[in-house]
Length: 258
Image (cartoon, rainbow, N blue to C red; front, side, top):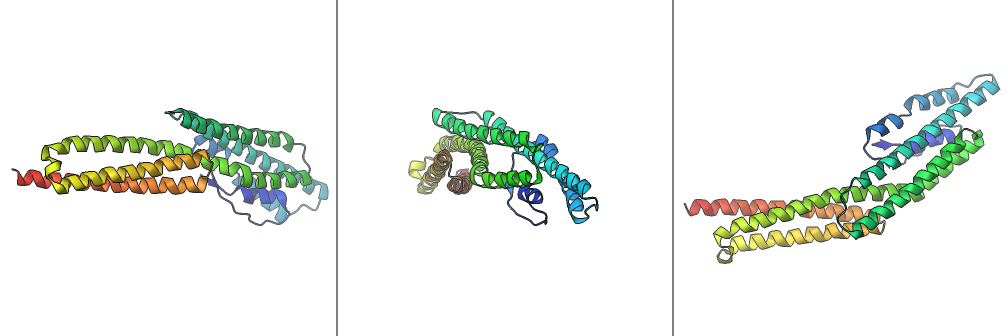
């Protein structure tokens, strides 16, 4: 789910309506769909700003309350998203101490983000317009520098663990193919042997990229993790193409030996 929160924050920050674009990734959760909908309140604030009431005090408090409500709703959404990410991380089947350490580090940083959002939310009801502007600006800059990178790494780790299952299955598939192909005596069939060796080499290379991605996640290096994840999946796809080539060679040999 994508939300342009900084557009909403800009409504709280400034009198004029201008767009500050920065898409934010969120965990996929039905609770978030409910908590992260602001369209009606945003449109209401836009209307109040574009069509001000001639009664200054009425205009001031109407605008103030809408800004408070929108910022409070934004923080509710961020709190829910952070909790959802933690819940998804806690569902992961951890295999070793290295993975456990990575998960713990990510959750600790998500806890810090959640505490930050809750602290900000508790202050919203007492903020003036200037206070709301300052809080919105702080939220924007802190998310850019501190919290979005943590969300990205959390998503990277969740994706990596899903991919880990694909690699386990691919290794199992290779072992099955290797066992089944022995009836064709690959040591006596250069084409079969070379393709089998090629499959193992490609699987090893893809697995190396997969493991490098985990190291990058441990270092909280999102760009590197993303790159290695993409490379590992491309490599895994190539492995399955080689599996297919093996199956075609086996079928051809069976036809010849009939």
